[in-house]
Image (cartoon, rainbow, N blue to C red):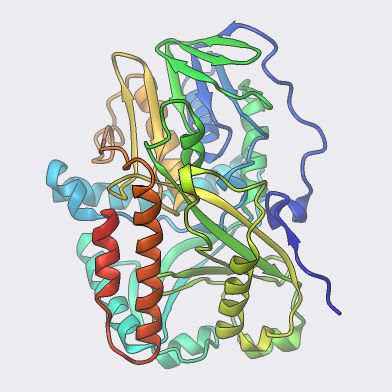
Amino acid sequence: MKAGPRLGEVSFWYADIGLPTTRRAPLPGDRAADVVIIGAGYTGLWAAYYLKQADPSLSVVVLEKEFAGFGASGRNGGWLSGGFAWNHERYARTAGADAVRRMVRAMMGTVDEVIHVAETEGIDADIRRCDELMVATNPAQAERLLAEVAHRASWGEGERIHAIDAEDARARIQIPGTLCGMVVSGVARIQPAKLVRGLAAVVERLGVVIHEDTEVTAIAPGQVATPSGHVRAPIILRCTEGFTATLPGHRRTWLPLNSAQIATEPLPPQIWAQIGWNGHEILGDFDHTYCYCQRTRDGRITVGARGVPYQFGSRLDDNGRPDPETVRRLIAILHRHFPAARHARIDHAWCGVLAVPRDWCATVGLDAKTGIGWAGGYVGVGVSTANLAGRTLADLALRRETGLTGLPWVNHRVRPWEPEPLRWLGVRGMYGLYGAADRHEARGGGRSRLAQVGNWLTGRG
């Protein structure tokens, strides 16, 4: 009998490289700095990196409740996509269409920027340039796919995005029932924990001080409080993304949406011969409850999707441990898309949270009066978005007016989420409707309007 998968323990990516055996020293007492950053994930570490690149004399302190890379930065699907995953029109209402197109171009540029820094600084994160392939396996999905290609091309991605037919899609990856595909070029696959841990080591070499095991209990202009002391700084950057709801006063700022993944054992050559996937594309589908997959460096398949999407009261997972029903759903997706891997052992299953603003649009900003900045609400495309956010936060903290500080997501604010039980009912209802829409479409019932109702329910559409 096969042993069950390892559950939690942060993520498979840490099973791959090992959890840190020692932690950086916590904050020993009161201190001062030029900039204090809350959160040692991608956003906070990129902000620290670009601040020190701009001004090596700056005193930069990063405070982290667990260890650097504990959150989504060490648990995500490894998609370095440079994609624009938010509502273009919502940004355009206040900033104009040209500004949104500038942001689309800036997002596309993050892929080369991350790879350039990794190569320059010697970060080995299993980075492999590839394409993104999204497949449609029923007529309703195919309709959405073609509409998405046209929509994204109209906002400036036409040179890197196109549709392919079933034959071309299956020549890349043998997914049963594929009708067509959407190809996005200029992306990359990464090992996320390697990237975040490497980035943490780089900023330390530049003189940034990272205090782990240091929980922030209060934020006020010019000061951050922890159980072991205060840090005084004129600039405070909140870079906590999906964990923002744990901070005092921020339970309703962004909703922590849950996502989960599994990883198979390394597959033998005869199985890969049946699947294909020789281009190592990052892979997804056009279900409303979509999945995201990668072929790893050592020949595994990882599959991610929404599990239990939201826990009452904005609660978080227990060290990345998913529930059994979520694991079952992920295995079902694996078997549906990759029947050749049906008998593969599942080595690991884990989960984490990503931040969702009330309008589902990412934001970065800094309040000039208080000196408090923030970034987050990436809605699942944080690997590349965090880099752009870190660069932008550095410019804002240094009071520089640049092309980045003029992008439409800068200082974009929306109302908070509703109190409980309304947000629990809304998000659970949305994903219930998504699931019903997917089942209807899979039976050949045509494009379902249930998903539109779900989008309306939570402000996503």
